[in-house]
Amino acid sequence: LASLCIELDQRTDLLKNAMCLNVEEYNEVFKSRKLLPTEGHRYLPYIVIVIDDFALLSSLGGKEVVTSLEKILGAGKLVGIHAIVGTSRMTTDVVTAQMKSCLPARFVFRVNSASESKALLDVVGANLLKEYGEMFVRLPGSPIEKLHGMYATSYEIAGITDFIGNQRGYS
Image (cartoon, rainbow, N blue to C red):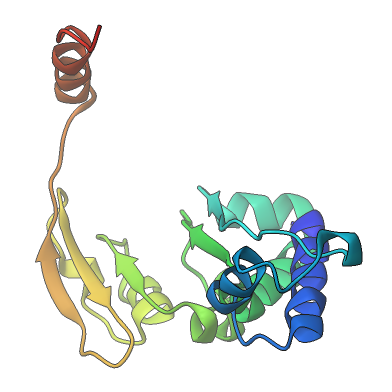
């Protein structure tokens, strides 16, 4: 996360020097050869960081992990750095108000208590969802919606991947 924060700062400086508002605009200007690699400019690919269990990561890394992720969530979107964050413990000390304000979308499956639901969605109800596939989704500027996603067991996933893997490929 610390190295991503360094990358974020470098990308911010590149955009500022190129007088661009976001990574899309910067890459278009770079591709049109108006920005020179000899002056430090480079094509900026998108970076997506996936954190499976943020509660565990923050307990191991402490405040530095939380601060770094808040910075990435807050400023990363403009420079092409995005994050998908999952957690197994939904308390306010793990999912801070600062983090929630920077997360454009929140998907919440069934949680154990109303307080966990309130910590993630700001409303109770996620504790009443069914176990397999039901979720609440909060998208920016939209009310909370209840969706039903697909649930597949490990056995079913193995069968699907075997089926696809055994198909004839291109010569």
